[in-house]
Image (cartoon, rainbow, N blue to C red; front, side, top):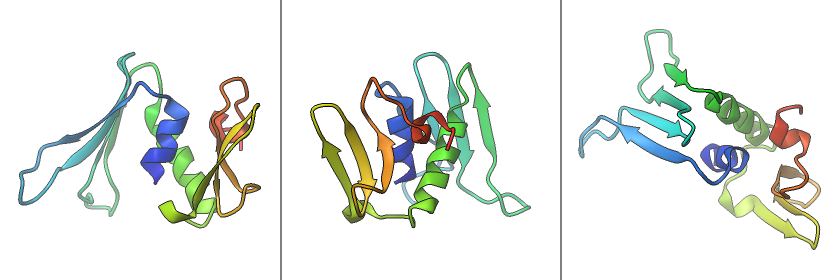
Length: 120
């Protein structure tokens, strides 16, 4: 769900990828990249301090979008897919959790709310 919400902020031209691993053990890292050369990668295994290593480069801080999406998702009660909805009117497009008043993302091209800009 967090990757989905991140993608809504980043826009349509991104690539989600996996690094390393094998068919029996799976990937060792997940990456997010955009055509402008921005890239963020997070290791899936915990480091010695119980965290994950994140590497980032390029003009856009892609990992900041992931962190912001994670905060929005947590604040909404960590909704699963069945709890999501979409409201479309002639002037707006909004992704919500549970009720239309609980907006997670405004998809309206002309309007970017604090949810998308990180000002929330």
